[in-house]
Image (cartoon, rainbow, N blue to C red; front, side, top):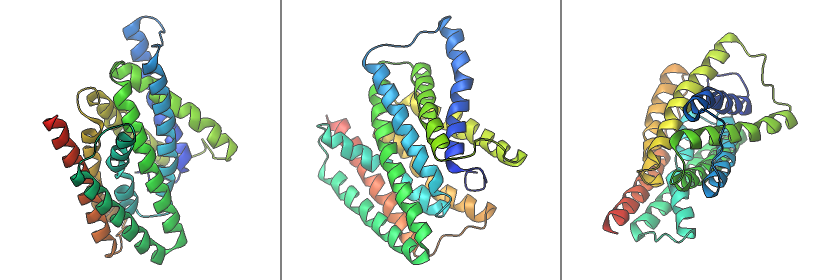
Length: 269
C-alpha cells in the first residue's frame, strides 16, 4: 500500500503514527480518568523508542520510492540482526550460531545491493535507506523491550507513536514535504496503513514485548518478505530481478539463524 500511494514517504510516516496516537490517546484518557504521564526510566525509554521509530519510518518508507518492495522488505526485516548486535554491545552473549547468521545476512545485503547497483543508482539509494530503516528498527525493538518492563501497552504505545509523529512533523516542514492535498484514494491508503500497519501490526508487537523477547517479536517481520513480494508482483506488476531472489533467501536465512540461536541461548539460561 505504501508503494502504491503517491503521497510522500515522510508524510505517510507522519500520518500513520500521528493518527494512531490520536485514536489511542482518548482510550488512555478514558482509562486513566486524568492525564497522567508515567515517570522515570520507562518514560525516557518510550520517548527514545519514539525517536528510533521516527528514524525507522523516515528511512524505510521513502526507500519504497527508489527500490522494489521485495528488496526494501527484505533489507528492513534484518531488524533482529541489528537488535542482536545492539544486545551484544549491551552485554548480551551472542552464540557462534548467531554470529554465523549475522555473516550470512550481511552477505545477503551485499548481494542485494550489488544486484540493485546494476539496476540503477536510485535502487541502490533505496537499499541504503531500507538498511538504515532496519538498523533503527532494531534500536526501536530493543528500547521497546526495556520500556515495556515498566509501562502498560497503552501508555507505551501512545507515548511512542506521539513522539514519533512530533519528530517527523518538523522534518516534513523543513524538507518541504506536503502533508495534504492528496487524492481520495491516497487518503484511503494512508488510513488503511494506519489501521492495519500501525494500530494492529505495531501495537500487537508492543503488546507482546512484555512477555516475549524483542528478537522473537521481530521474527514476525520475516513473514512479510515473501508475502510483500508476491502481493507487489500481483497488485503492482513489480517483479524483482531473478538475481535478487538468492539475496532475499540469504537475508531471511541469516536472520532466522540469529533468532533461533538467541532463542536457544535464552532457553538454556
